[in-house]
Amino acid sequence: MTLEQPTPLEPTPLELSRRQLRAGRSRRSTLTSLISTLVFAAVLYLAITSAPGWSRTQATFLNPQVAWESLPKILEGLWLNIRVLVVAAVATLLLALVLAVLRTLRGPVWLPLRLLATGYVDLFRGIPLIVLLYLIGFGVPALRFTDGRINPVYLGTVALVLTYAAYVSEVFRAGIDSVHPSQRLGARSLGLSYGQSMKLVVLPQAVRRVTPPLLNDFVAMQKDVGLISLLGPLDAVRAAQIASQSTFNFTPYVVAALLFVLLSVPTARLADWAASRAARREQSGAAL
Image (spheres, rainbow, N blue to C red):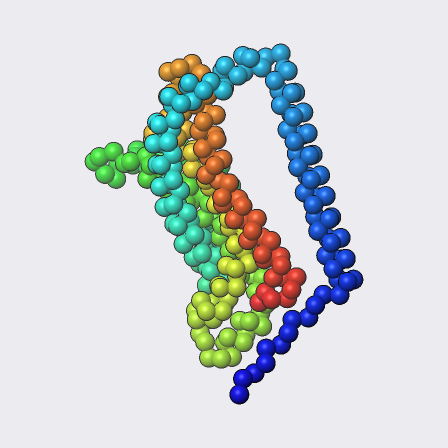
């Protein structure tokens, strides 16, 4: 005995007219957006190129030959920035998660750990990253823990992790606090310990909710990773500085800036997608 497949319902003439209306509105909206973008780009191009100092600016900042000659060294330095970024991002997430959990511990016995985590966040959120880079980059070698020279890349990475962990831990803490207490109580009523309820119930929901702001912090770190050049490593910014000083031209800085933009665009779009996805889940009531 075979079951008959249900025949799909044919759309009514009214539904077809509605679809045509929506398709027409979508085409008009796309065309209007394209025209307005082209007009804006044309006005901006004419405004810049008609400036009195455009020719001098073009020769100083947009020299194709200088850009091509400096590109290999800047790319080589950018590879160092990417490696530092990956290590710093992973270490920041781990340290920030530990700090957030410490700050959300309940009970008077955990007061010293809460105070320690709170003091850490207040301290490293208050110190500018550039100042911390100088303090760690030049202060730690002065202590002479080792006979040899400490690689400034390591010191710069430590400074990045210490600073960003303070910010990211607050993002994690906001996510943990946003989970309704009934979730935690329900997990405890099932016999889970505090650590198990945090690991299996609270943290998965908290991380899912704070993914968009975490990605925004990651985009900010992608830019700030270039500040390690202040300690001397030959990263993209330092390579651009050397090329600029040797050619008396600022084009290498523009090349480095464009490479950093290209590096951050995928993460920015991923952050937008995650934010819109979280909004849709919240509006549909699917978020836990």
